[in-house]
Length: 355
Image 1 (tube, rainbow, N blue to C red):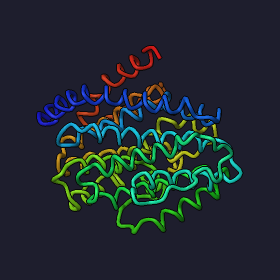
Image 2 (cartoon, rainbow, N blue to C red):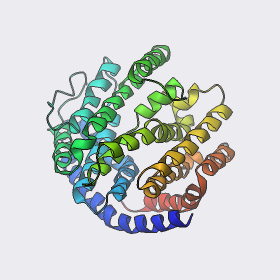
Image 3 (cartoon, rainbow, N blue to C red):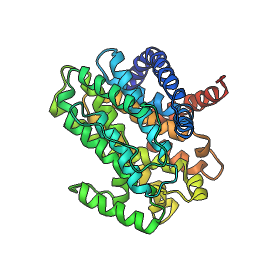
């Protein structure tokens, strides 16, 4: 506990440096988004930057894993998260073939981490396409930053693999739930070798998260890291920390997803009670795996902070969710319970601040 508190204090100081850098990077992308010619894409890009700002702040938190302050790493983490949030926003638009559209657009995540790869026409199946080079600019900035990180060659294969897995999100946009679930189950069976005691929907949930990719990018900023550290880190985040993240996100959005008819990973469990119990197991396993890593105190802080961030949402604090949220907070351990009140206060302050 003492070590965790000491690590929290160090990371808090680092955040005082990280946040102004994040603000500058977000403002850069906002200025780029304002210039997008197509009104629909411009709206989606600006909405993603505004409404999903907390995602960007969370992604930048991974910069605390680096051995020293690195503005290149912050720029990369922000650009990659802005790219992901932008893709999530524009794939919500109706398309003739929503699955093909989602898969094609999400190729940008892979290409952003492959400096030697080609940049394709990501809008091939999209109803709107006049973005003025916004998407290509995000990809190129990520590539330039990757090249600048000293240990990127060591983590590159795993990072690209993680980004490619995120393409499973394209299947989620299939409007036919039976066909969608069959496709997701088949994808999980083909994409993973097995060996984990997890359900197929937990694997697809983990694959849709980029937390492992962000952690690998932070590892690339350390000149002393190599393939062994990358493999260990990837094994902790995939599936455990990534699955816990997506399940908590689904838990928070449970009512909203039900109202809109959107795909809910949480809804695959036979009962809400089983869903909460299993998510508690995933949270506990996530923290266990984080503690075992090199620099484990900081990985544990990130994992606990992730749990607290989701549980601090208003949708997790309703009367109906009070007891499940308490159980999930207990599963997150001391650090999660310590961070929860602070993050709830921060959310209120963040929502009240002037635009």
